[in-house]
Image (cartoon, rainbow, N blue to C red; front, side, top):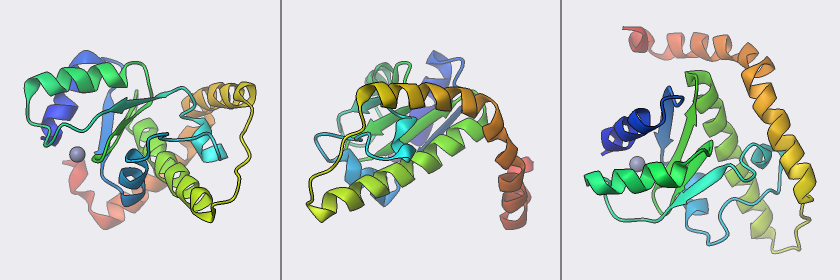
Length: 163
Ligand SMILES: [Zn+2]
């Protein structure tokens, strides 16, 4: 079923060279919250007005659901699949990977903030939009500096991905 998701996104979004789809507990927990991802931390800024939502339909094995997944993803950088998991897309593997890393952190931070029950400070929309745009620039440039370090880690764990 993961193949269904990936194959269709690759077909429909030629710029999405890499698709990451996982089920981290923080992401699944957040996916069930009606209000979804809130712009409450710097980690969440990348996804301000850049995240889509897809309602849960069961195991993703039907061809017509794939169309709805791609439509919900649209031009967004991430897709919250309700009660299921998270998908990020990037022009390069490092972009989709970094987005997922940031998404999981943002989800964890939001859940921690909301768990306090305290009133939460909102970041003004204009600031959110400005930072989201800053990150789009950053992710195409400086953010690439850390990628070789991740590849070295991966080589240590299992170099099989290079085959
Ligand atoms: Zn999945």
